Image (cartoon, rainbow, N blue to C red; front, side, top):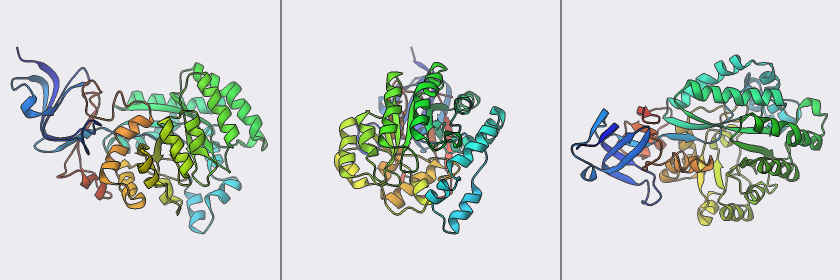
Length: 404
């Protein structure tokens, strides 16, 4: 009796991104089948049942199928924008100067606190739809623009709502240790006490966060303060990640590794010791070329060291109002190649397999493998390099999320 599937994609070229295959794990004459939202077969046509039936068939006509894209670092939910600060930077002001003058993250905090959940949803949906329109099927959304329990919870609840309103998987990250709120009176230690003692437990009890993040930098929080947040998160059973070594080397990569962080992100100033620590811990390096470009940075993340030590590298948009107002993961791939000299294979893996690893969901998505969610992007391209090579062009033919 012929086996029946919900979906069969045939006449396809598959880029499976599987680690047990070389390169992109290409299968030229490929078939992919799914049932109940999960992949049941991803292989060559010669190995697939000739008489298999399906409720839906997609004749790909030689198009490429990749895993659905994964944007593993965004700040998608926020109020207002910071176009005025962009103008100031064009006139010569630095990111740090703007932040120390009351701009930067704190200005977005004021706008976000003033916004209702309905307003936050309305402003975030166009950004989310832009990512979905380029084949993104999974993304992370951080809080960090509330800096009090009420608004942080509202940001995270909005992120959860977005995931219910669109066919996309959203993972949420609690980032109250992002900046110091004005009412803290400059007392960072006291604010971190509040984050650890009150805010984080409340967020955890409400089930609003899948992970906890911190911004370890001179304009943000120290290593000791970040470690206190991480210890509190671990005590609540939540994994951690870190904005590390973006503007200076304060040992963020090593701290992230010490706490077995899912990822350390930015990493422009990470040294060899930090890279080695990440390699030992299995912490993913999330590279954010949009922020590097937008802030006109000149120190690049140590990609050669990551390669030499076997550190997994992911790419993400870092979509945020101040330093990376980017809603194109395809452009982030091009930036990863042109600015950071990543290869085509590294860029592809960076927005699929390694991005899923950075979110702790590699067991569910990120490669075309039996048992994983049937999250697919079908592309109108002749070779994978086109997705990295082209700028401002979207060759997505079709997108599938959980088999639909």
